[in-house]
Image 1 (cartoon, helix red, strand yellow):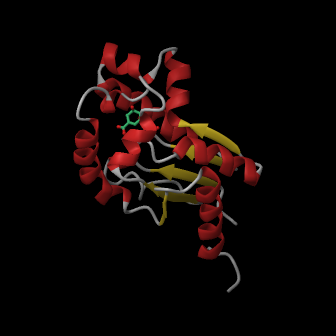
Image 2: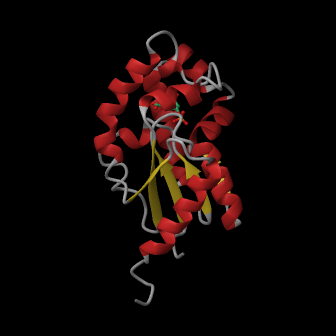
Amino acid sequence: MSFERILLVGFMGAGKTSVGRLLAERLGWRFQDFDDVVEERAGRSVAEIFEQDGEDRFRVLEAEVADELLRGHEVVLGSGGGWAAVPGRIEAVPAGTAVVWLRVDAREAVRRASEQPGRRPLLAGPDAVERARILLSGRAAVYRSAPFGVDTDGRSVEDVTARILEVLAESGTPDEPE
Ligand code: S3P
């Protein structure tokens, strides 16, 4: 595989972090998660940043971290669900980046998110599935511009990871012989 980095995109609960960690392990690469780096730098959780400074400020911090991490080599990156939902971002990633959309439906996203309570302010409170549906229906058209896509509903982290490796190996790249 001649990609230098893999960027996982998709909705909250798609498995970007858990799959990203295993994928990096399989490749002998590093894993970095946008949210983790934002939290480390801010010294606060994502939920605290949302609550104290507002979502707009979080988005600024997230964009700064993304620009920096996307310069790394031999790294798997887990983006936050909102970062790749901004039109044009996926198309603008540096050359050598394989962008993979991990697909998940709203119900499953909320089920997975509920396993880590307090981590996702946008899915907090009642009617989370309905809110996830609305958010996801707006975002899916943008996530879809990722060159690679893998379904995650009903699949284990191991299966999804294996499928990503398969899809990327099958893809060939311009500098590989036919
Ligand atoms: C968000 C997704 C979260 C986190 C923040 C906002 C979103 O990351 O960045 O809560 O807008 O979809 P995950 O996708 O890793 O849950």
